[in-house]
Length: 262
Ligand SMILES: Cc1cc2nc3c(=O)[nH]c(=O)nc-3n(C[C@H](O)[C@H](O)[C@H](O)COP(=O)(O)O)c2cc1C
Image 1 (cartoon, rainbow, N blue to C red):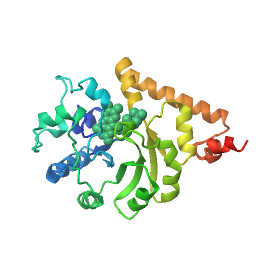
Image 2: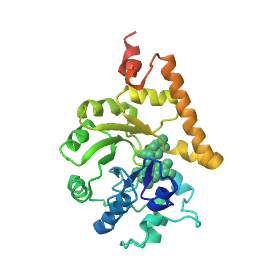
Image 3: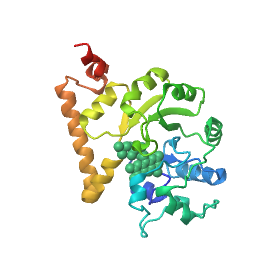
Image 4: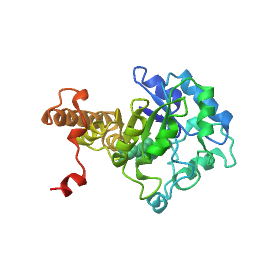
């Protein structure tokens, strides 16, 4: 599980509730670097195994549904990880505005900040939000970076960016075996998982399906979503003749160009 900086349960409480679970911490590098550093230390102390740095949110995208619905965090929820954050906007204002405006992240974020992060932690850094082979290539020059999560923030940042599954192959080709590559965005079925693995992803993540499971039936609902995805992946592997994850390969996926030759 990747736990968000903006989670409504703290880094520590999630850790206590899931002692056996593998957890990574999703970090926004905020203008207040001391505060950011404290978050990193809290994640380390609480046993998180990697930092997933979101790099596609220097500013928040225009989310028309959030604006139309006047999205605000419901009053019974808060963002405990940001308690004590003194920023130009007060913390409560930050919380209110996240749905439709202010960014938690430093808008001037650059590769230098990734190097700064590597200098203050030994945790592996994974860049979340890379969408081009060019950026993946630059990541190779930054030693703290150990992985790339190919993501377009679930399509919530910039309308018109490519689907992550479309750019996955060029990113995998750019980094080879040197970095692990993961994918999120639109993974809804076991065959989606199979396709991403076939195109070189080491693993996939889901965002909204987990929330839908939660809305449907709480913790059991989330478990059910995962069970469905797992059983669909098993079925897809069986019916495509793959006895193990290692046998899933590129030949399973063809694109439009294949049909245009028919
Ligand atoms: C309600 C919501 C909140 C999100 N909050 C964050 C966040 O705080 N940090 C982040 O890096 N990504 C955030 N994301 C993006 C997800 O991490 C993920 O990239 C995306 O949801 C994956 O696409 P999917 O929902 O189609 O599976 C959020 C997505 C949603 C739907």
